[in-house]
Length: 523
Image (cartoon, rainbow, N blue to C red):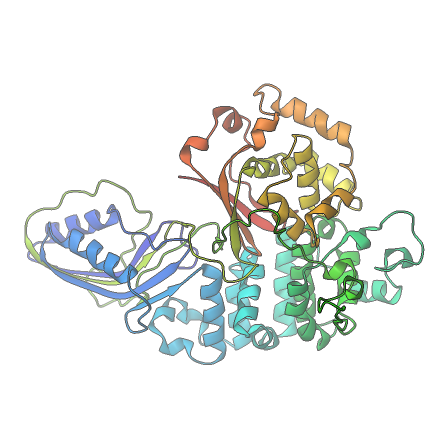
């Protein structure tokens, strides 16, 4: 169920009592093509049961109206249950599973196949189905105060297997614990320490920045585990996926060893200066830095972020098949327009277990900096992700990963070649992804590596369509982000034929070198 396509309605059990089989078949066809209401944003909504009676012509409208009513009401654990995103749903499921409550809640019945397994196997099995979503699930668990409980309930072996699968998704072989430990013992080479005694140029380790929230999320948990523990390795992998996924692809053992050293000592004490503010001199160098949106610019309105790239809406989760029920097991997939006309007849319809997958709509205030959104006039900058994802550019980024260890830095420098407007919320966002404290620090990034070669590729790929111009970046859009996903929303009239012909506005999807799933939506 958790892998439904976007805008999906899934009916677990449809029971139709009618005088003729033809009437029941027509009603089923009508419901399959009906314009079901949407839950809004990337919510999942479970509706336990819908029941209506009337003529065959009346039943579809009554079912849709009743569904709409449930969507407009708050949670009622006996009838309606909603989750803001799939990551939030999975965090709640794992928590209930660990506390032995899952089997008593009707909306978890689609997951009953996991309930009889050992807890570690169940957790790893559920997470294995959503590897790209793991960073967001971990963040949601941390918000609920359950991350430590879930992580400690995983066995080292199951966690190691998850880490192997995640490393494969990113595109490298997971280093062994011995390989990481050897680098730790050797000091990860003295020139790569965070505080080199003498250096004329920055090393890749100095350029790596971690958000304080990310450090706080994992610090206490990791300090209680050994490097050889699979749970330790999985957590380090998630940190590396957010901080430097590009360098992680190229030098996984060195990156993981360096990250391990970041968690090896207690967090630095926070001191305050005369004005009561934390002294910048006491902050733990670049690894603790975090960007703050400058107040000199209008701070964009924030929204809750798209979690999955494929928003879901679920209605009813009495989701276990019951073989002895009439018309059992009906599933309604992607909803279409123009419902099929029904025939006039007397009938009663009982609809059990409807699952609706909604389109994501912005508008709800963000509850945390990890799950937020903003408005931008430079949304076309994300089009360049499709350029960076071409084979020759990926090779160039990997070749120069020590110079620019983050793909966000590549995107920023590439955008500057098209006169990127620096006074835009998207620049604040890029600084945030790079762990910088101020947007002005972006100027300290190294210049674009192999610049002439990169520009030659741009001319070769985009000369015919004429899109390699500053106008490419001009796109009014809303961007929503989470630790695992980035979604860009723009109006339908923003689609430009030359950009489409150049293949720049297609969905980038999973980008291992960025550590995110990126989706473009036009409405």
